[in-house]
Amino acid sequence: VSERWIERAERELASEGRKRGGARRAVLELLGAEPCALSAQEIERELHRRDGRGASRASIYRVLDELERLRLVARVETGQQVVRYERASGHGEHHHHLVCERCGLIRPFSDPGLERAIARLSERVPLAVSEHEIVLRGACASCAESPAAPPTDS
Amino acid sequence: VSERWIERAERELASEGRKRGGARRAVLELLGAEPCALSAQEIERELHRRDGRGASRASIYRVLDELERLRLVARVETGQQVVRYERASGHGEHHHHLVCERCGLIRPFSDPGLERAIARLSERVPLAVSEHEIVLRGACASCAESPAAPPTDS
DNA sequence: TTCTATGCAAAATCTTTGCAATTAG
DNA sequence: CTAATTGCAAAGATTTTGCATAGAA
Image 1 (cartoon, rainbow over the protein chains, first blue to last red):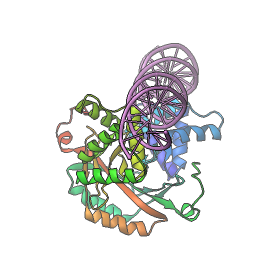
Image 2: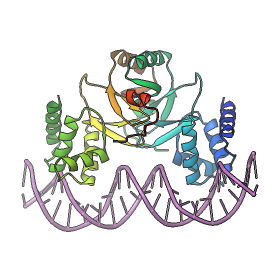
Image 3: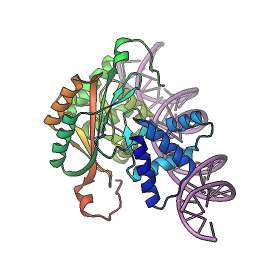
Image 4: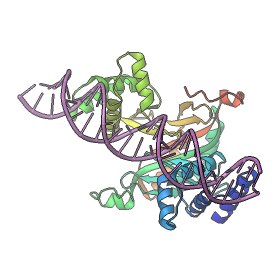
């Protein structure tokens, strides 16, 4: 599915008159392979870790900004004081997020029933809804067990 | 309902051994009167506007931080790259947010059906859910009408 | 060749901290 | 009197911009 997403992205970028560059390509590949949301910082670190080269901070921000405008990535705010980005699924792949308040772990989840409820609700609300975001916060399994371990902040 | 909230807050703060101060008092009064979320900056500006005195930035952040720890205010992230805070309802007053992507307007909404769906879902998820947040994004009535007006960013 | 993409460093924002002075209890 | 509260300014952290260069079409 990620291959498809990268291709779609490249196509849309090309049709906008954008040219290819190393930084954007690297970000696309990373997000294409990553199922869930990453912050700008995480992207920067990860890119440098993979191939020593990486991409400059500025480029990463610029790329993310552009991809967001094109709706190729979705901005996700999980309440951890960081903005994260993940590839926009386009079709049924839509998901939301579980966030552990203790260790910061993020996990995706999806629920058809919830989606239906949101869809119905969207009709009745004074806003032409184009997207929605749901975050459930709490304690993940391992944190619920070990009441003393400090946040890992990996 | 806001009076109640302020009283509750003062009580809990007192029982924690906290003393009263002007800055915190001002923030409490502002949030107590405000039904929906404000950012630190908005709070600062508003306090200065009301009485010329206002409160220092640092105090505002400290107060918000403390109120959040005590769960007296809830952090709200609407996807606008700002953290906002609103008083925690405590009981049934729970609400979520509609955000206009064009002008930045934020409106609260609530929906029992949706809450039920969330409650059911929370049982089936690998996380001990303690809270949730829902944001619907789109175009508000006035922005949907005037396709050219720039964001007001009031 | 022309216009986009990138990197670097400076600038702008937003938050947090250190410290001294103030004030509530 | 003691400990919490504030304000101010400095320090941090994150994100954006300006500008010159490299690169794609």
